[in-house]
Image 1 (cartoon, one colour):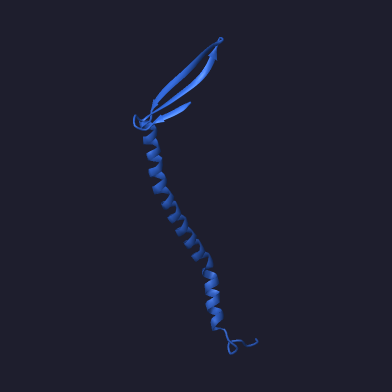
Image 2: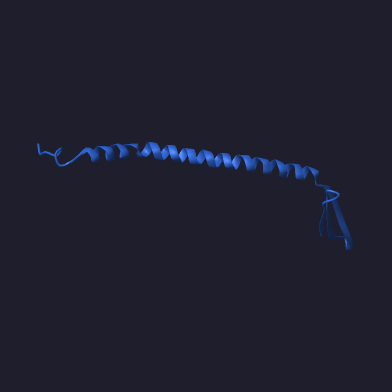
Amino acid sequence: MFLTQAESKKRLVALPCQIAGENYVVVVVEPLDQLNTQLQRIRDIVFVALPAALILAAAGGFLLAHYSLRPVVTISKQAEHIGAKNLHGG
């Protein structure tokens, strides 16, 4: 049985067990303060790191596309200037 009490900030776990033919219930109570602190730290990291990672990935993708397509843009601009008058056989 698991029981979390928000008002007392504690979690209780009770598990039945049998030792040498005798029935027992093992009860453990743990404060939730440390767990809540760790979860808040993880939330803070995720809410900062995730947007930062997305921005970096978008910027990297933009730069990669920009520099890799630069020769294609150059060829395209040169092809616009080529016309029937510019084409003459050797």
